[in-house]
Amino acid sequence: MSADVSMNKVMGNSWLAAILAVLELVLGFVMLSFPMLLGAAAVWVAGVALVLIGLVHLWHVITRAGQRLWSLVSGVVYIVVGAAMVLLPLASLSIITMVLGVSLLAGGILRLMVAIGMRNEQGSAWRFFNALVSLILGGMVIWSWPSSSLWLVGTIIAVEMIFSGWALLFLSLAPKQSA
Image 1 (cartoon, rainbow, N blue to C red):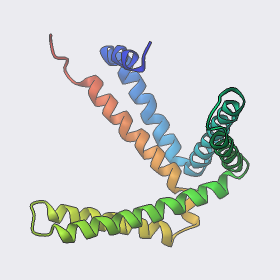
Image 2: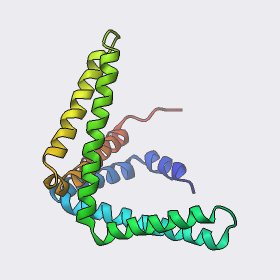
Image 3: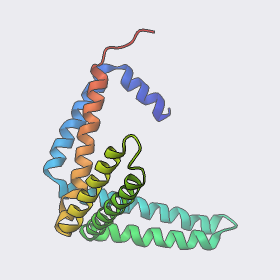
Image 4: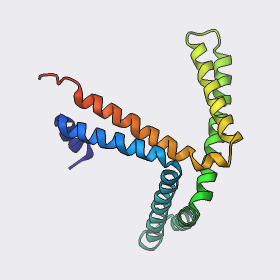
């Protein structure tokens, strides 16, 4: 059964969708109370996934002809990075947080350049506002680094869970359209 079909079954049953939405909301708020735990768990899960992907690449070295060198190199890199994430989740979280902060800052700079270049067009004020928000967020993450590593990734995941839960709840409570 595809994910699309099973999601249609869930959304077709508004009570089940509402229960799942409330569960996601509750878990989101609980995880918002433990952002460091959630961030470290997310890094650990990502690390395990990278190790498994690396093993698949190494398996391709043995079983597939062609591009063996690429599979070997990428498999080893995946395994090393994944193992580092599993064994050193807080250090990995710190690196991910810095990359996120630098990405926000770089994105803000690019958005600012676009906003300045398109300053006479409709919506340019919103582009400028978007650039400022990215610059401020990136600056906040970098300025408070490495202490922001302890809460940022987990907070982002928890907030996403909360908004996803609200969206699912509102969809489940929306009046059904007749066919």
